[in-house]
Image (cartoon, rainbow, N blue to C red; front, side, top):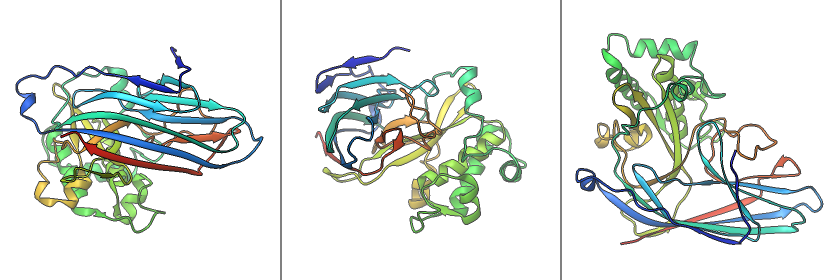
Length: 321
């Protein structure tokens, strides 16, 4: 597996914008500078190497990444994890005492997104039919999916019935961190509440259980109708695959918060986000010693082979126009 090593402390990568068709230029678009500052505090002395993994955003149909920079006292290694193809920035250092600071910045040019007509291979589609640790596809989940979709014709109609069921049955809530934000389908089904992670984990479980591939996507929300400020937390959504059409996005938690947009968020994503990684149960590259990551959006750190969580992450954005 190819690994590229950069020994300089500041790295700039420029991605050329993709050529857009005339139809694509009619979609709403947004250009934003994003800066992320990461600080590790209270690093224990003589406790083994400090290992840091960061997600690296990729250009794709609906977003172009430009002017990526990393400022770090530690050399950066750029890799790709093998299961989903997520790009990873890896840093490792010995002898760090108490404190380590680094930052990344990039420009994202994001546009409104409808569907990805890329035809996926059979191997990848099979992966997006399998369960994840917190995303089961059998038993209670499958029985519920069969009940929801009974009498529906075709995969699109079946998926829409699952989308509507979750929007009607779940309540958007952050009130219990032991329940909300874990992305455990059975917990969400039991308590009928949660945030984007919970909505879309249960959606993926239900859709996969009736033989339709679905995948988990995560990144940062870019606040709407605000030109600059702080990004608080992450946002995630899902996509499902229809033979002959490709990947189609849904954002059920946004549809629940904004019921006037319930039809829009079945098959569309707005431009106010940036995608970072795909998938669950992620094994990084180089591989971490701890368990697979539930999802990967913020820095993951190990010291001496053990997860380290004394990390502060501040993310700010500024519109380009």
